[in-house]
Length: 391
Image (cartoon, rainbow, N blue to C red; front, side, top):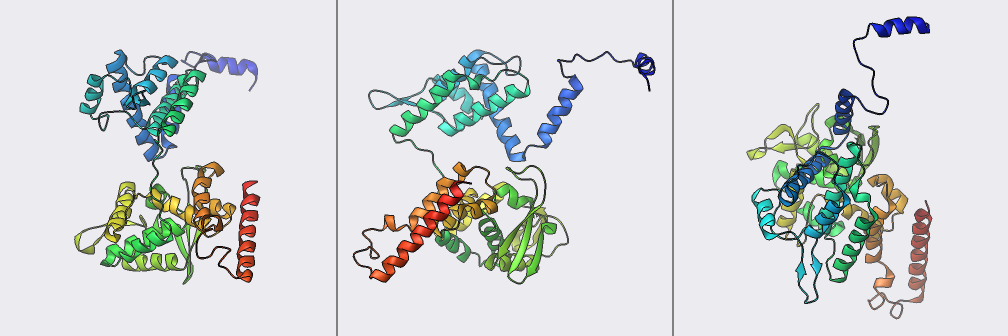
């Protein structure tokens, strides 16, 4: 088709030409649909919750409706000052959110309770606000240097006053064994044992990954080895199936669950009715967290337990047993060394000779041959850690 024919065809089109610099309205909706479909359900819920809070706070604080126009950086700074507590000279803490507005936010059920918010909560809500601006093609108010400096200094101030980021208790080997020891209550115990072992020894799986597994995602290699396949995850959104191994007790537990609740298709881990009847419905992410908490309670374990305890516990125990960091990340699929190193190093130090200098295995009480063997093992572990740290 030549230029004249193309021009003739365009004359028959009953559409106005698009502006090169403006995205058509239906294209905007299509882009939004792609973004929504490509975002994990838990992330969508957290974004929706954060934007609901922003809307309520803006209306009460400024009489402004979220969505009319981009927000200036001053609003983001005010949000931080309203919600982060700062230490005063008399040792008390204060934040700028007026009590009446605080009470109104709680009454509207967009805020859990009166008082300041945690640093991580404020950071997350700023992050969501920034993403909302980017999706609308506006300048991000959260990128302002003044706001970044304020957040950095606020974290330092809280840290110096003893306010630290609370992390869930890691399930290392001993608490895992205690949880598994409670799984003797019929079909429920068989399911929970398989779930705990897959999530833990299968690489510290996130709860969304556990509930997303289907019957067709697992296959048996031999009596002591199964493989399970991951698709789209939080850090790998390409959807390419990647198989991970389950060995020994984890493989045997999975086989026992599939024998107790046989199915041709559907969710791998399903809900149970009273009497141990297996439902066709899969577990929710919240139910995975409740299983961990219930088993910890039955085991009499103190701590702040959650589904993430399985993931952090796997990494911590791997560091404790001297597993190379690269091997750990291949199982967990962490993309950031910084994210995983905190748990890994904590585990490595649990059994480090440096933390046991006054213990019964100290240099003064050990025979010389054992000292040499221990020293060699420590050197090998350090070499392995340094090699992987350079990847």
